[in-house]
Image (cartoon, rainbow, N blue to C red):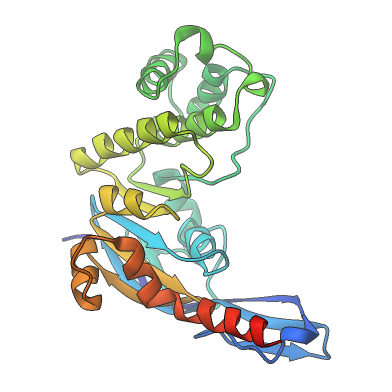
Length: 282
């Protein structure tokens, strides 16, 4: 299978304000080093390696602060790794970001729009930036919005009058509009109502079925990961601690009843339990 993404020994570090009371509590697999008691170095990604093939959907699970969004930003060329190699479409993200960006789309939890414009107007603006004609953009935009549950009236209403869930669906429509080769979905259904979540998941399944778009999906929803993803990666403290199919991960931890949440806690839950014990003892 042709590699769309190659990450090899990738590390990314940041400096954050130091918490003196917790400086001596070193997270599992995460290096923290204080300087002058005021700042500390945190390894958001620590020696991460994996490959993603064409048409594959890879789910990335992890607690808040585990490195999921940092990994998405590195793959999308918004951040460069401090160490290691990241290639997208065989191109180094450091050397060829401008060749990579037109071929990918990214959806984050907080999408940006022109709030005074309608959903359709926002999508037309985005399509024109990617070189699509106005006629083509309007036709494709309306079709995607309808598929995501928008009426003709709703797609022409200002975004400032829409709920957060409806705005998130517009962000997803915008990402699919240009038919990207690589789609990066960073917690796309967080905060959506059940109907909107189902609409988005079904649309992702339709795109997946074409086999033409590779998808990276970060999520806290275990059922969503199991439903949509070919393989699941688990990040803990910036390290990749597990990578396999959902069934393969269950076999590794001895989970018989199809509960991916139990798998997640088996690989990433020990640190939280230790921290809770420390807090109780304090």
